[in-house]
Image 1 (tube, rainbow, N blue to C red):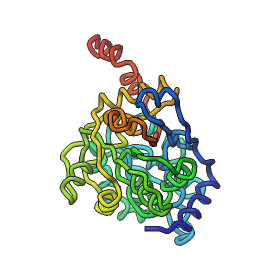
Image 2 (tube, one colour):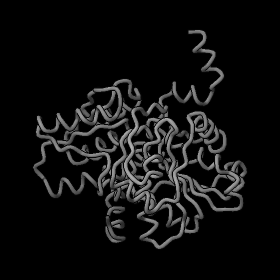
Image 3 (tube, helix red, strand yellow):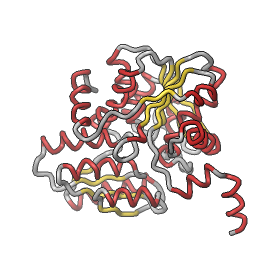
Image 4 (cartoon, helix red, strand yellow):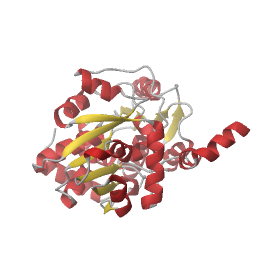
Amino acid sequence: MFDLGQLERAHQIVGRAMSPTPVHAWPLLAERLGADVVVKHENHTPIGAFKVRGGLVYVDRLKRERPGIAGLISATRGNHGQSLAFAARRHGLPVTIYVPRGNSVEKNRAMRAFGADLVEHGDDFQEAREEAVRRAGIAGLHMVPSFHPDLVLGVATYALELFGTAPDLDILYVPIGQGSGICGCILARDLLGLRTEIVGVQSTEAPSYALSFAAGHVVTTETCNTLADGMATRIPDSDALAIIREGASRIVQVTDDEVGAAIRAYWTDTHNLAEGAGAAALAAASQEKKKLQGRRVGLILSGGNIDFELFRRWIMPEAAAVDRIAV
């Protein structure tokens, strides 16, 4: 999909907009897992999530190759839309973002704050995406997909940073939404000639990639009702699946309760805020704790964009349960 020179040039593009994100070893997480643990903090980007990197690289190439483009349109549950809005603003491009009804209120506010024209449509991401495609044809806007080589190239820059700091990782856990993050990690690892095992993470309530990985072909699901909206995917991308099946060892499924426990662990052990997908890697590592003893483990904290009420529900489940009963 790209070579090391292209990856390094993409890192330069990203670097014009943001600094490298931290890679920290947290002693309390090490105690929790019984392993040497490092966290790649993609919750510390200008949009609070890793996807900003893909948007910067995608829009940079698009603007160079099509300087007269009228504007962008896409669909998202939040972080992809923030990424495009952030990148488009730097190039003076208008952007329209479709989200499903009931989407994260705070992610919607952030997308508007970055300059996006936000439209709510459909009951889930897939319905919002289909309407965005239809609208792109009518309005003459450029439809930005959720998975594309330039998006993967951009987000792979976080893996370049991580492996530059910690080239000796035995295993790396990466959450899967549409697949750009884990594909970027796989491709960067291979370009650098490293032997790190890469494990994908999905929700038990949105297991389309896990089912597809096991079946050897795309398997869709009727619903994706996880609270971890960054992993709420019903229809896998076939190109992403091919890379994942070739380069990942397996996909671990985690429950919403396990994700909630990981959010609390990040808060107590590191005082970092993680959204559902951002905590998924820690949830999977906790599930596989017995396999990790004495190993060097990497966790991708992919984002921290979580609505306050959902954070409260996960961080204080007993209090939230009392509130629901009272209502």
